[in-house]
Image 1 (cartoon, rainbow, N blue to C red):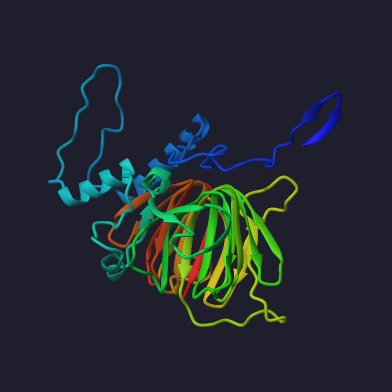
Image 2: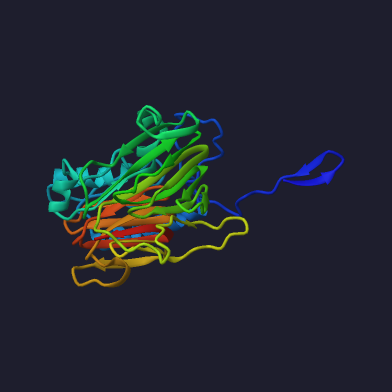
Length: 353
């Protein structure tokens, strides 16, 4: 806020731009569903064209007539009997159900056995769907500011390569966290503001679109300045060396351009067993195989948070899912299939092994 004299003030936006899924300001907000994704007409047209090209490649065994004009009744050519199970999966892929997609499995463990991806839309982590955990003070936290209460919802309690994913929210307050973390946590801030402080007093403030990494054996302090909502990945892994001064430090990096802050692309954190970064995805198709190297290597489990754009993930069995801004996707180690980016996308990725 800049003073202009005569009692007037000029307010500058903290963001030059925001991804389409970013919720609006939520001071004092409680249990409000996350905002929906909005896409312009031109973008929808481009996506439709790309989707039609993608469908042409996959050659579905069924589908709607390609053209409808006026009041003429559509005609459908004779076709082989439809595989009802396959048709149901295709319908589910189009309708984007508000549940994580186990691709017909009952749990991530069974899903991993078939090496199928897992997908959850942003609405799965809406605030009104998170379970209350009560106050942090009642849970044993060393609270000294306010009376923070938190809520959470995992994608599942099972783990991929020792990692789990989910969402967490917390009201305003602060507490010391002297106990060494047993895991590495990576989270993307959906809304709210806060700060984590290393044991040596170094402060790391964060807000919407920031990626935060709290490495294994980190300790220090938490302060939530404005109601906080995040999605997270927690990875249990062997020890990694601390810094030269013996302090395990938090890492904070913007995944979207902030006002006056540089745009991060590439690796944000590399702890050996856990690697975190931000990557742009250009339109095109990638066939992920066991021999694939580079970004889409199947040697490690990969967690994705979609910031912008549209892409399709297709399992080896042909089951597919459309992923848009705000979605979470998990590719188990050893996963093979197709990644079709139909609109330029930007993702936060977490690789674990």
